Image 1 (cartoon, rainbow, N blue to C red):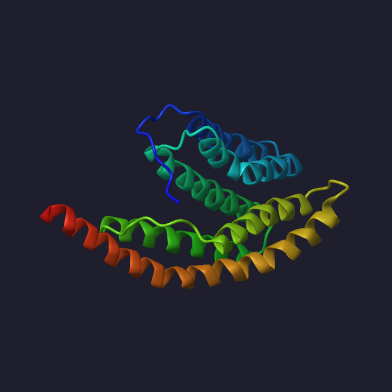
Image 2: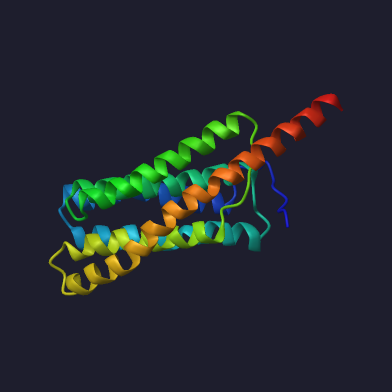
Length: 199
């Protein structure tokens, strides 16, 4: 079921997305400027949990916009990649784990951009895609919390790995599953463009 999208940029969902993006420098300041791993982990976790809020508001109050359809997923990807990269730089997660996440996200993101330039028809993120994103968006902050001196550090680290390993497996599974979908929507997008041009 398609959602009607307005051209209006100044919507509540877009404001929520902008606020989430504006929190990124605060996260960096807490992590590197103040060396407050626990607070940085909480903020990063909140940014991950609120990933669904702007989308829900857009659907609930009929404020979906063409700008938001691009701005929201782009912001999510930036927060995810930069957040993971900074947690990796802090030494809170192993090199292999951080690099595996960032490599996958950059590769899929680049593939989507290039395919879109070649008139790929946009398609929704799969259910498994949403699930792996949630797992990793929770795992990374928990592992960061696990590196702190907070009383919940040990539990946070164990929980982080319980979520992180399945999340990593799912993220690569969905990456390969996107290949035929990208190919299919490239063909559909080009066909649609041809029909429009001929019409």
